[in-house]
Picture: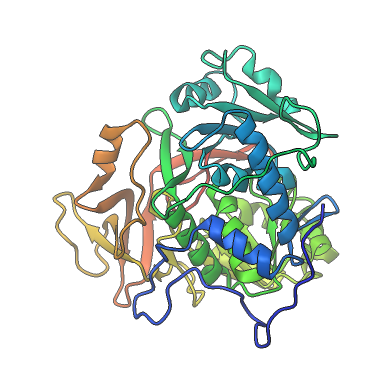
Length: 452
């Protein structure tokens, strides 16, 4: 999978070829005029030959991505998918998944990524609640929908391992007779996807994520990971997860390559890191601990990786990880409802989750909503300094939205404190459950970004 015309970088363009934030401002502003789709169009025109992503020895350039997105969008349109329609997507990690993500934006549809681990009543709930116009699944998952109440009558489009998407029409997606049309006029406030988070006190809630929120998460991720042009990010997290999705515009903006792997493997992790020549890895709570428990190998230090960034690394774990693998660990904090990252740890301070990102104000309050002094523990609440960076709400759940967002403040449910430098420390969190390699982990709802 390749594509795009030959493009040379302009003189002096050695580090980055874009910036998701407004320039010349004391407080950075996530652009209200640029969108994820306009970013794709611009980069395809200017840097079409740059490798955007790789998977299983296949490469996809920015230009190739753009061309496949246009044609896939055309297929979606011929299937009746249009602006505002929701499309449920239950796919593994691969290049076709990336293409579909941008194609749904092109037609103005709302992407509903579905956890590939969901089965039975959990899967049934998401489908019934989202009421998608179409469901796109791997061939291996297609049988799951036979007995799902509410799935009857919804078109099921299957992605086959050997031939790709089956859109129910003849000819390849880029056939000459396949019509191509201009993209929808996407705005910064438009909802791009609905991410169903695990419910600890009730059914999952669908967090609505806008275009502006996605670009903010990409900006914070770039800063936290010290991303620069030419870097290679290992993407082991599934593409139904904000930790992976936030990298899609980041790769376009900064000029990094996304190296996708099918799934996380603790025993093969460093071999994968070395094989794809990754320079950054993202982690969630429990992941670093799993890697530290693996027996030492030659791959422990035979790699190019320089930064591990994410959430859920106690100070002693981060220190042990740095000592063994010679990688800087940066602990962050955030939640999907607040553009993924609320704080980032640029100085590598162990035991904290860093300072608030420039466009968020963070406070710590008691049970009466009174603001607490430094180093006093209370609930962490977050407010955007610029509009549009907190979720517009939970899909079809006004009660949950009102409970979580009050007077513009997002109540995280997490306990912590701020020190004299406005550095944030997490003390306690609401728990959520997720599985990796068949193991179950309990960790903070907000200090990690797992959609399960």
